[in-house]
Image (cartoon, one colour):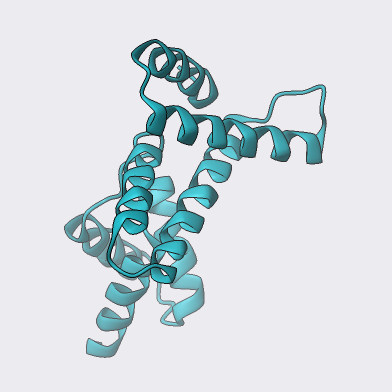
Length: 145
């Protein structure tokens, strides 16, 4: 099922269950998708990859806003929103899988420059690769060579 369709179905379920927190987050995600769609072409749906990017961007924005609030009710609310948004993103790969991908890339190429290697590792991991984790592990690996 497409992400947008899944969000719409979950929106209906949240309405029936009167789950106000989930309802507001899902409405916000759909609003972000509609803004992105309007920027491209109002009469065509966004491709699945673009919808995924919109959801990921919204999740990153929420994560960055955590730093603006001290411990308390608002911070807890944002963490709840992030957990809801995470349900619609692909699961991130673990450090072991990242290390394996880095080793595979290093074996396959003689390149030792950080930029091209980073690009190749992220391409192998696909949407499940976390840039910060990959960057740190790749820097550690290159430093040990």
